Length: 148
Image (cartoon, rainbow, N blue to C red):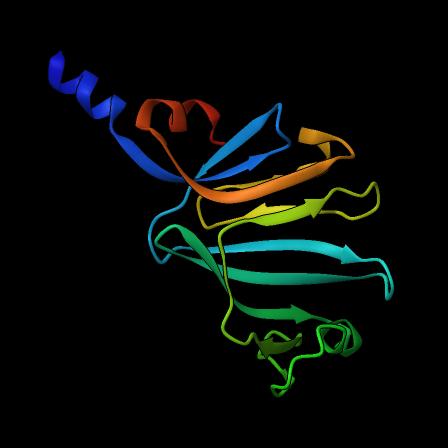
């Protein structure tokens, strides 16, 4: 029983999405991809920002969208190409983020997704500002708050 208690109390890395009052946790292993998707308000198209966890930061790898203008909006100096899925894609310049700050908009269709879980932000938090970061929480706590 002691071994089980220690294992459940051991800190594990998770993705923390919080508005300062409420927090949602999602398991996120080292090197695991994370996609933050949303409807871009200027061109009214979906955008997919693809990150990967590296240690305690989120590394932005690339951005994809069906409308090239939403990629050009980032004003990076790389090449925008058509991906095999039919979406425009551009690799991001090196950028590691200790945290992401996201404003939830009613029409934004904002979503966090990994291979293991996915959740819409508006129904969980309402219109607010969120902070997204890699955190360490006891394993038992991560099981209780992980959306499925």
